[in-house]
Each structure stands twice: as C-alpha cells, then as structure tokens.
Image 1 (cartoon, rainbow over the protein chains, first blue to last red):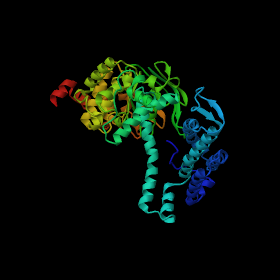
Image 2: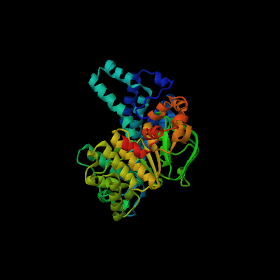
Image 3: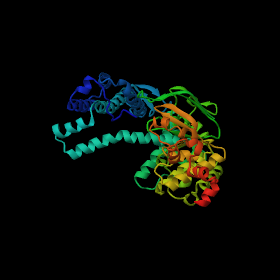
Image 4: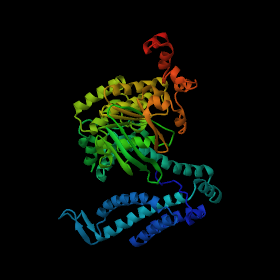
Length: 232
Length: 278
C-alpha cells in the first residue's frame, strides 16, 4: 500500500515533534513555495523536505512518492516550457515557427514551477507519515479551535486516500488481466489506456450512464482515442 | 502448464508473503488453494498472470517466465476472476463488458460478437446483453465478470473466491459452470474459504500457511488430516468431521467427502439411488 496518508511508525526526532509544529512546518513550506519564484530557492526548499523525510527515517518509503511527483512535474514542465516565449531561444522545435521554441527563461521558470509542485505535494505526505491521525484531530480541535465536524471531515477525507488508492490498484489489475495495456512500460501508452477508465468513473459518479462503449475492433482505433487526438 | 520453482515474494514494505514455494500444476487439473486470511493465497494467484512478479525464484506459464512478460500477454493464457466483480466492470452494457477482453486482444468485430454470444450463453446472460451491468445483482455481476474472462478463451482459469457474497444457489451455479469448463479441458485454480465447495469440486488441494505450503495432496487425503489443517485454522467439511468421530472409521466408512458418498458407503446404494431415495 502507498505511503500517502499512512502513518509510519518510526523512532525519530520528527516523529517526536508536537503535531502542531509539524502542521505549521508543512503549511510554512507550502506558503514559502508560493512566495519564492526563483529556481534555487524552490530547489533548496524541496531538498529541505527530502532532508526532513530522511531525518524521519522514511526516505526509502518516500522515494516512490518523490519519483511519482518527479514524472508528474516532468510532464508539467514539458507543457510549461513551450508556453513561455520570453528569453534567449535555445531550441526551435519547428524551424521557421517562432511560436514553438524553448528559451532559457522558459526552462528556468518551468523547472522552478516543477520544484514548486513537488514541494507542495510532498510536504503533506511527510506530515501524515510522521503524525498519527488522532493526534492531528486533537491539535485541530483543541489547539486551533477548528469545529469538530470540519476536523472530522478533513481527517476522514485523508483517511480514505489509501483506500481509494487501493481500489484504484485493484481496478487497474482487473483491467490488466483483460489484456488492457495499463502495465505497459511506455508512459504515453499507459496514459492513453487509462483514459477510458477515468471517463467511465466520471460518468458513473455523475450517473450519466457509463462510457461511450465503442470498444469493438482494433484497440488502436477506438473512438475515445480518436476524440482525444482530434481535440489536440 | 504452471511451474513454480522456489518462489519467494515480498511487498515493497519488506514483508515476505511467499517463501520458497515449489510445485507444478498440470494441464486439466482442478486445484483449490486454501489457507487462513493472510496466508498468501491471493498473492500466489496474482503471480500466475504476472500481476505480481516474483522477488525470488520463477513462475513459468506454459514455459514463459512471468518476469519476462506482461499481464496483457499472459492474459491470453491465464484468465483471472477477481473476488469483487465491480473492480472489473466499467462499460455501459453487458455485451461491451464481455467484449472488452477480446477487443484488447485485437479480435475482429465479428469474432468479438461471436465470443460475446458464446460466453453469455455459457453463463446464462443472454437476456441481459443490453443491460447496464452495474444494475444487475451481485451474482449476475459475477457472471458478467466470468463471461468476460471466458470470452478471452484462456487455458487456465484462476478464480479468487468466486462465490463470496453470493447465496448458496448462485455459488453452486458459478461452480457448476467452472466444472463444465474443467470437463472441456481447462485448468482451474480457485481460492475459497468454503471447505464444502472444495470437497465437492477440487481434485487437488494446496494448503498455504504463512506463505509456505503446508500440504499439497488430493482433497480426500487433505481433509482426513484434521490436525494438520487446524494448524492454519481450517476445519474439514462436515462429513469428514463426522466420520472421523468414530473409531476405526476408515474400516467402517472409508473416507467419504459428501453426503452422497457416506450414504453410498452405509447403504451400498450408488449416487443415483441416493438422489432417488432422498
């Protein structure tokens, strides 16, 4: 099961800290990530989170989280870098087309934004992995005077993250068992093969009655994929 | 068909779940995998279609090492029925749900339609082909999941607690379908906590305890060793339990597994006569 929103029992300085301290630390780190805009400050902030995870003796468990965030940030980076036109051009993707170029400023800003994303998304797992839920509730209700119903809602939503992730894993496994290529090593293939499952979940939740189900024929040419490519 | 050699498996958190398992399942066998919760049954099943890869040793399906293959490729040989059919179902009609596997295998539209019709007929879902599977009963949804497995025509059927959450009649109906497939030559491996089902259907039983094989023998031999079974919190079905209450039971009764067998032993009647008498 994933580390996200799961408490890891360790004997460390970070675990022994007061929950309020850790809560403020994670909010402080998130706040700083919005205040900083230069690459080096955001990189330093991210590595400070890694250092805290190491001090909490759970770096090994956090590696998959950092790895997942890195790929997400990379994906984000690839889009961002093309949207920023200012700066000295480093590479023009289509010769003669100035719209699709990568600039030094674009690389700098997109990398900084990637680090910001990783900081925001990684500080909370560190908090939750080092603090028991009951301690967090007590702090929220007794120290921060948050109404119990709101604290309960907050904790409940966190509590179910691992459950949802486990369910998602089961769904992926069930579809892989039907030769759906969700376990492909190719990220792009995996991404596009995940789309119809997400589509069906959204439809199901919205009670719209399921997906478009034109699944017959060669899977390469199913029409949800055609729609995605057409929209691009 | 399936060859497991010194299989060891641990989840990323380091907990060893399977330790040094070695066995072989031949084509056409009907095998039950039993053991207490946490014994590693589902983890072992997931090794057979590559959902989990060994951390030590090998699992070979028809000579293919699962570590060198993907679940998508192995799905053509090993069909996996999950305990909860809702993890599998996501398309708006039963027909599309059954056709999803063959579509992934690259079958033509005509071939998919043919397979959908055949699989639906095998599990009695023909009247529901245009229904939304999510609105069917649990037993019917399990049949949808089973039919979508059949439509891929795998040689090996791996069933993870196929009767869980179903009433007696629905459970027996599912197992009768499985039995019919076994008669056609399919290899069947199933996990269950229902020892009556094991006694009724399985030819061979593998008992797992804490990730190791405690026993691997015929159903009859396994259920007549209650002391070993108790070590993994399992109890034989009622008939073997009753018979073993008598001294010298083997001389008087033999080793019956079912009411029919016990009746036949006592009265000398065959199975058909038991049905007639009862």
